[in-house]
Length: 295
Image (tube, rainbow, N blue to C red; front, side, top):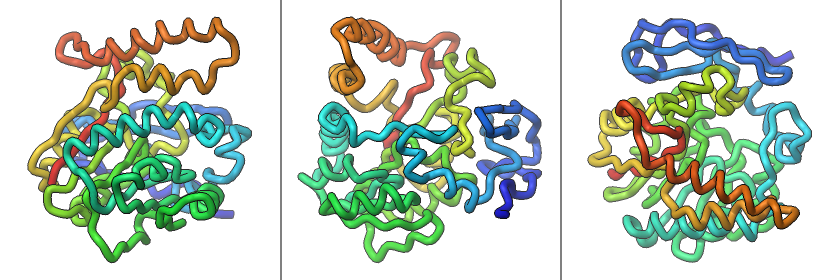
């Protein structure tokens, strides 16, 4: 049987401080794990973390079919509606990078790349053989079924995206350093994740929905920004709540609507989006954030 956990770390994976302490004990269905928090940089991480082989075992057809304890919605079912967000995000990226090589890390079924390919030469990596096989059969993008540590491209990229992916890595310093090296000068890295120092996550505590078995690392706007700048990125721009307009989010949500009354959900979605612009006592109200890092 494959080992489930690594050896418990005595150091913060982000800043290498020894000032780490117990944070939460998380129970999600059949998964139980501990998180620690660094008192120096605020980074939260699973400790001990799951092994690479155990993490890879999550991403089968059951993960995308929502039949596993830990699962993800299959975006193929609502591609028409998800496309509103993908197109809007690409339009925003093109304010900074017009064309060139485009890499999506954790590209799933390759649908985001499908829309990016209108302007870029698109590439993707995906740890799941199930979704990467589909992507290769239905996409013009070059997609590799490979783990991040084994990915060794022969080219550099003008844009690299990690949309809710960086939290899946145990060693974010190494990930960001590799991304920096893979980017062309003037290239941009786009990272979407949750801000664990926002009121939304702080108020929910151990019940915050982002504490998931596949999430090994948990950031704040501050410590992720500092990591990017320390790595060598010349500038960082933070979008709150996201890097696309509210209308795109509303139109995407229609993919899950069944009856007319479902449109009432637009009130909640709109309020959440608008709260993303607000802060209380210096902390954002909501956890949603997207960071653009410029080389």
